[in-house]
Amino acid sequence: MPRPPLPAAAAALLLLAAVPARADLIRFIDGTTTEGTVTQSPGSVKIKGYKGKTRTFPASEIKFVEKGELSWDVAARMAREIPADASDSLFIEKRLEIARYLKERKQYAPEIEELERKEYEQVLRKSPDHEEARLGMGHVKWGKWWFKNEKDRDQFRKTARPEEMEPLGYVRYRKTGLWEVKEDVEAIEAGKVKHKGRWMTEDEKRIADGYVKDDKGNWVFAKDLKDRESAEEAEKSLGEKPPTVTSSEHFRFISWLPAGETAQMKELAEKAYAWVRDAYGYPLSAENEGGEVFIGDPIDVFALLEDGRKNKWLDSYGPRYGIPPNIIEYKKGRTGASWHSLGPVPHFISSGAPAEKNRQRDKEADLYTVGSNVTSMIGRIVLDRIRGGQQMPWLSEGTGLVTEIRFHETADCCYVSMTKYREEVADKAGSKAKYFDFMKQQTAAGLDRPMRQIFTLELNDLDWADSVKSWSFIEFLLAKYLGEWKQLVRRPFPEVEFITPAHVDAAIKAKIPKDPLAAAQAASKGAKPKDEGPLPTEPIRVSGPGAVEVTEESKEQRAIRAAQAEAWLGLCIQKPLDELESEWRAWIATRQ
Image (cartoon, rainbow, N blue to C red):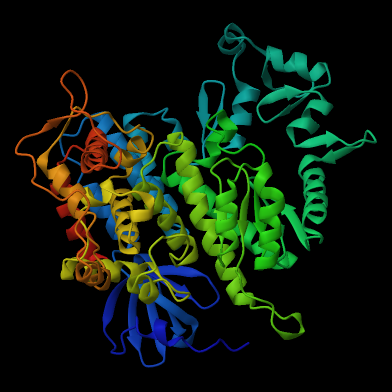
């Protein structure tokens, strides 16, 4: 089947001359992605992958190229940066950072798994029983012993000597000839089965697998029962039955999208959820090992698609979910709306696009709106779980963009100021490269607010460009300080005793619009920055004995937020903010 032609916006990212360019990611029209060094020729693209393996594709198959460092080069650079005199603990942590990076990147270049394994081998030389490294190598554990595979494990359980096993509480089980834990043998003889690491009766196993008994006493899958109840509730509340109700482990879609498109969104949601948890230091696999469970019952995602249906949802579901009446009326007046509560409770989505003649719909617009909202909200929800509701607007907005851009290629959800920047950059032809280019243009023109200013802003004061800078700053921390970031993201914002003149200055300047058009309009009306006035000449004590009283929404209160965010970063990244931001600028300049 012929491929569609290369879109003009994508073609613009590809060089016409037959010269090599460092290419981080190559996205194909069919949605797949690979990694390698790109050489352009008229009508074709040659991609040299890991160890020089080269493949050639018609240019019409390429959607876009995001240029940057190759994964194997990044890993080599990270290894060179490990100090020669590093302690064992630092050496292990840095090697694990490289392995985790390669583990994420091998979705684009599966061959680099050998590099990931080499990093684990380096760790095991220092710490032979290190669990993450052993699991990364595919090893299995039984008792206190690690084995390369299940075959080696079972061979040991057959041939181990009694004098070694019996003092440790093991018995040889007559039915299998294998050494077993005594309590396990007793459970087997009692008719129990081992499931999810515990011995259970058959009924306990069904419950652990998510089954419940219905009103007739039959075992049914709990999610199926809840899906049916959700469909009935939606039909009763909205006056029509949703075409699709389906749930995954963490999300339930009550959807007016067709089943296939809903399944596509459900898969996208789970992938985004798993990635952001791992990137923020709470891998999904930990749930099976007694780790953090952020979501119990699946989060409801209402893909309503039409404004009339959305308004019915607000009237029916809004009050029961505690949405204030003024917010309900506000949402009724907006198209393309998304509402979420970090509850988890409802999450509804509406493209706002009216049905066309003959009940046709804009399929592309609907999928775009749902995907945009879902990925952004998932980033925010995971952050909220990790931080227990304590996050600043720049951190929440930046995390929403991090997830949305990575999985939806745009940043078009929920960002408050509709400026010319957003109109030019956030659209359906988005890519991470495009947002990096935007930030380069912002820094070159001196239009990006310093992070100290962004720290002071409330949600509704963030310009769209501020949100994009917050995104790029978090991307920088993920790339350069992954270990520190995973520690940092779970730390509360510290209380501060003092704010400095620099913090107060940032609070004042942050109120000046950075969009040139908005700034000109404000100046023409004689507007001045909020609370503009003389700067203090020395630090101001804001807590403890002798602290000054800080009024709500004053420049001092906003300055406190800046001081807290700056101190928060310093908890794990031992660098002054100005130095860290200079490092960010140098990093941005290399992004493509």
